[in-house]
Image 1 (spheres, rainbow, N blue to C red):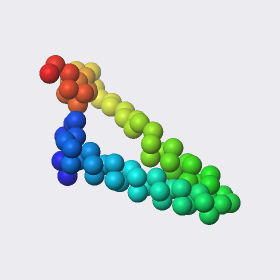
Image 2: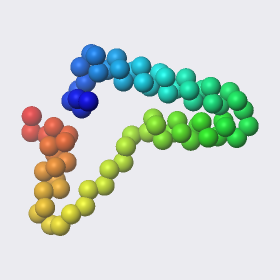
Image 3: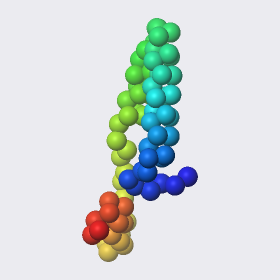
Image 4: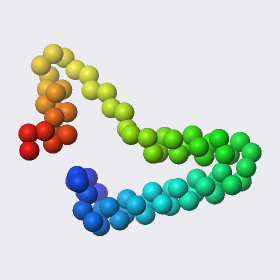
Amino acid sequence: MNASYPPNAAQFDRQQAVRTALDRGLHSLAALGGDLVDHANRIGAILWSPPRVVIVGRLKAGKSTLVNADRGAGR
């Protein structure tokens, strides 16, 4: 899988298709009622929230360089 950013049109279409399928599945799960509504909502909150990343390391280990390279700083 190519993880380039920003995604090209084909990658974006695939990502949207996956998001749509997941969203439909969560709605179907919630439609079953009971405690499945809460489960579907929790799963959705995890799927659609931004990722959290922690980077730790020794002083001058290149943590900032890694983050800046990942964010595309300096381009």
